[in-house]
Amino acid sequence: MTTTATTPFIYAKSLEAFDRARRVIPAGIPGHQGPTEGCYIPRDAFPLFSSHAEGTRFWDLDGNEYLDYMCGYGPNVLGYGDPVVDEAARRQAALEDVVTIPSSVMVDLAELLVDTVASADWAFFAKNGGDTTTLAVMTARAATMRKKVVFVKGYYHGVAPWTQKLDYPGVLEEDVAHNLYVPWNDLDALDAMLREHRGEVAAFISTPYMHGNFVDNVLPAPGYWEGVRRLCDEHGVVLIMDDVRAGWRLDLAGSDHHYGIEADLVCFCKAIGNGYNLAALTGRESLRETVASLTYTGSYWMSAVPFAASIATISRLKELDAPAMFRSLGTELTSGLVEAAAGHGLTLVTSGEPALFYLRIADDDSLMLHQRWIAECVRRGVWFTSHHNHFLNAALTRSDVRRTLEIADEAFGIVAAG
Image (cartoon, rainbow, N blue to C red; front, side):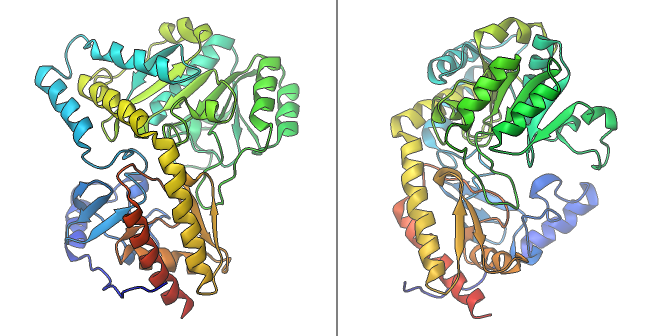
């Protein structure tokens, strides 16, 4: 592959903004996008603040342009500033947004979700993915009158205390006292766990496939989800699919549908509104009254503008057959990256679904070689992250993929040369 050398970016204005931020915001940038997190390695390779975004790109404060394969950590599914979605949001904003009583556009979206998601008989709205996973677990416990929840080891379901580990700051023993853990793709372990705690388990919660951080992503083994469904039915356990990250990218009918089952509850967020702040829990008829009985709401949970944006987003995803587009472009991109690495004597492992791929250079167990390669890509305008799965959006073109491969090839050459 022939590449044209690019000049590495500098981030003076980002660093100035971060100095200001540290004076008034704990950690400067809190959470997973902060510079203390493991995705930004080495720290000096990444800018910290953006200035604007459009399509599949964003620009930092220093004017550097990036092809973005994180998509705002998932929400950007159609492209930043999609004109159809933004126009739907503007029309709704001209009418109403946060009002004392909800807009009927909420009903319109709920009807669309019930018509779209294969396992959905109803929809309940919130703001964050963690809102929906928490609601799902509350629903399961209320419906079954049981306490325990089975997780898959390596899980992530949000930042509420019940989702965290006992050694995390601020997490109490009581918060996680009823959490049980089994390995991914291990039906025997799940069977044994449910038998050991027969009549005590309210829910099994899992992402559709393992897309954790700092680890190769793993798809479900043949028959795995069918086996999980059977065991949950046998033991009266509510099956919760956490589709916050993968939802709308694998299958518009839900990732549970993609893998051949119907979950009892499905948690959606991220790509549901192309960046407009919204989350949804969908579920089966048998759990409708249980959800209705819970006290669970927020001041902004019924704001109308995100509902209108979500209707436009889902409709546009259907028109584009976006999951098929993501599979095609994701396969082209990941195959090209593997080939480019091999051209420099390196072994790049790609895993997960093509729409949400994970990358790892396998030639160095310390991970430093991989981190150096990611850094060289970012410094040249391709926004990858070291140890997180990546996302595609519908604004991505084959020309973008070719440009990505050119920069990646240059970065492979730099790290291979030492």
